[in-house]
Structures are given as C-alpha cells and as structure tokens.
Image (tube, rainbow, N blue to C red; front, side, top):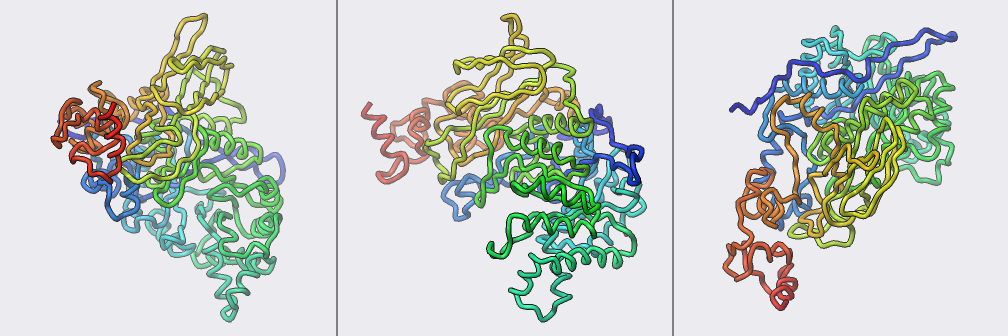
Length: 574
C-alpha cells in the first residue's frame, strides 16, 4: 500500500472564521483580530529536511557519540505527527499544514526568512500554491530573520516579486504585512550607517536613547522607500537590549522606546515574553498609533543541548493568552507553528499530539470573540511528563530536569467529577475551562469523567511515567479526547500513530524504547516486539528484563566500571 494513505483534498470544518474588519467607532477604524503562526520553512510536515532528518535519526542515535546533542539522546523529541513512514510532496505538505491551521482559527503563516534558505523559499512557494489552489481563507507572508540572512528590503522584495499579485499575500490596511523577529538587529544596521564613526559604546548609548530610537524607526521608513511601496511592518521588541550593559537602561526604557518606535511602525510586539512591563509597553504602543502585538507562544522550549524552558502543564499557555486579552492585542505572531527542533511547536507532533494544538484553538476563539467558547461536547486532556525528578538516565547522558506536573484539563458543558485511577486523585470540575495538577509519579496516566457516579468519558495517555528513562526529556507528553476527531480530519481511516517510548506494546515487561533501541530500529514501533524478556543476547547469564531493571546494556557484559554494573551486582545478590 502506498505511504500516501490519505487524500489532502477536503477542507476540514473551520472552527473560527477568518476575522473581518468592523465598522469604525471613531476616526480610526477598529482593527480586525488576526493571528499568524511563525512558520519554519525548513520544517514542513512529512517532506523536505524534516522527513529526511526523521529517517536519519535511527542511523545516528547512539550513546557515547561526540556530538553533545546525540549524547543527550538526540536533538528532536517531538517529531511531526503523520502516519508512520508517510512522505508527502511539498504541495501535499503545505495543504495539510494550512488545513490544520485554519481548523483552529489561525489566519496565516509568517515564514521565517530564511531559516533553511532555499528550502524556506520552496516552502513559501508551496504554501502559496496550496492556498491559491483550494482558495483557503488563509494568508501568507514572511518574517525577516537577521540570524538567517533575512532583511527589511531584499527579503520583502523577493516576496513581492514572486507573490505580490497573489490573493493569499497577507495584507493589513491594504499593505503587505511583514512580521519581525529580533527587529532591533535589523534596525541597528541603519543606525550604524548613519553614524559611521561611532564606537561600539556610542552605538550602545544610542540604543537606549531617544535619538537612537528615532534612527531605528527611520530604518523602517527607509526600507519602505527602497521596497518601492507602503509596507505594514511589525517590529519585534525581543532582544532589544542584547549585549547592552544593564546599567545603561532602566525598567521603563523599553516602554519609552516602544512609544517612540510606534510613531514609525505599523505594529509592535515581541517574539517572546517582554517581562513584567508588558502592560505598560502595550499602552505606549497603542498611544503611539501603532497596533499592539502581544507575544504569545513558547508554551515550552527544549532546544537540546542548549536550553530548556518548561512550565508545569499548560501554565505558560494560560498566562500568555490572559496577557493577550488583558492588553487588548489585535495582531499576533504565534511562536511557533512547527519548530520541532526547539520543541516550541503547536503543530501536531509525537509527544504533544493534538492537545496543545486544540487548546490553542480554544484560546484563539476566546480572544477573537471576546468570550470563552461554549463546548459542543465534553473535552478531556492529559498533560504529563515521561519521568519524575531525581531518577537515573541510561544509556544516554543525564541532562537537566525542569519541574513538571501531571495535569488534567477539562472543557465541560456541565460540571462533572474527574478521577485518576491508580493515583488516589479525584476532583470536581466546573463547567467551562478548568485544570488541576498533581505530582509526577510513576505509572499509567489515566483520567475518567463521571456524572451521577457513572463514567461518561475516559482517557489514557499512551505514555506512562517511568522510573527508568533512557534519555533526557523535559517536554510535555499529551493526549486528549479530541485526538480522533483531528486525526480523522487529517488522515481519514489511516491507523493513528500513538507514539510511546515507555509503553509496552507486547506486554512483556520490556518498554518500547528498550526493544527498538537495542534490538530494532528506533522510531519504528513495529520493532518494539522483537526481544524476549528472558533472552540473554550477551551471554552474561542476565536476562533482558533484568538488564532493563538494572539500567545496563543488554548487548554487552558489564565491565566493573560501566554504568549499571553496581545495579547488576545488587540484582544478582538479591
């Protein structure tokens, strides 16, 4: 049977309609509320570099290698979610991405320019082609990335020359909409040209002075002139003081800078949280006449081996959307749609499945309509971690652990009782959105919804909590009762992929990862049943099951100084 198991023709039900501008209530029209998702053109689902890297991982994922990310167990944990082995054409991939985004109320993609370089441009072209072919209610633009060669003139000209006549080009107030990432770096090029003899210290002082902010704002006016037409530029305030000594600026400096920059820009916001002054910054931006674009996204970030930022459950999600509503943002760039490498994606994936994705749709609808959506059915979500703190990782190198939680989220039409079998946990969930957290302890993660003492809904996370992790992993691992609804919308009757590393497909006591990694092909769950628990492949008179329990290598006899040797000795003595 072909790996292309499904048709990408039908547009799934749109949960949140494309926003339209409302009639003006004053001299200035009230802007529509739109959300664009930052899109990594180097990571399209099931095609291009993403598909290639996923296939290569089993060939290189071995402990003891020199590469630091590989020593930690690889760079990516949360791969793109499609039926196992599926490879799509760029156009099929773009069609799937757009259908998924439209289904939760996202209005468009802002393609990182140019992460992936030629690959990013190919993704851009494929997205335009897919949106035009099906006339999806969806818009596409770019986000110049100074770290990847993007700029305010060349990248924008490229977009307009190739797609300027497309009805799917994102526009705001009739102008091409261009999002920003670390915009200060792009603006400083202009400042440095205006002050060719300025020292590094002089430039740093300009970055925290009204004179410098004026020059930085003018950089975007100059870019517009060079592009040759009016542009709706969005400015990202993140990294504004990167490498500037802290003694040169105060707590209100960014607020004052935003107010001045807003006189030159169409919209200002950030790529990440701007700190406790966010509300003041928002007020300054709106007072300047620009639109406020509140940072939203980064529910988690696990960029192995460089950095880890993880909340307990969906704490970051809830707090972020509360800021969006409280500060009355009208234009958003969600970060990110598909950065699987940094695990900041909301696109459906191995660990997070459709949970963060579906909940994001709930909050988008709340923001757009001004009220929490009324649930059309009971919804139950589980968010967990793969292992608790203070446990040993083997055979890969131990990495940091960020405190997590087992969290149950409910969106209910009427109140109900929620019970976690095997965990001695029960609580009353009211109607609407509610969440409850519990400690991360080993065992299956199951939740039941009860009314009048009867179970009306149950949900099991395919990934249990283990005491014996094989690699570092701080990412959320999720499941929801909405999984099947979304999977069928994406892939029809194709068998669902329920990735589980610590589950036990054949119920023989050996977890899936153990059999795939030592005796099969890691990543292919079909090879998670090939080893017997009583087998002794290294002839050391210790079975695979005992090797697993002791966290030792089942393919080689343990040397006296090898990790796991002490545990084996204790096990044998017992």
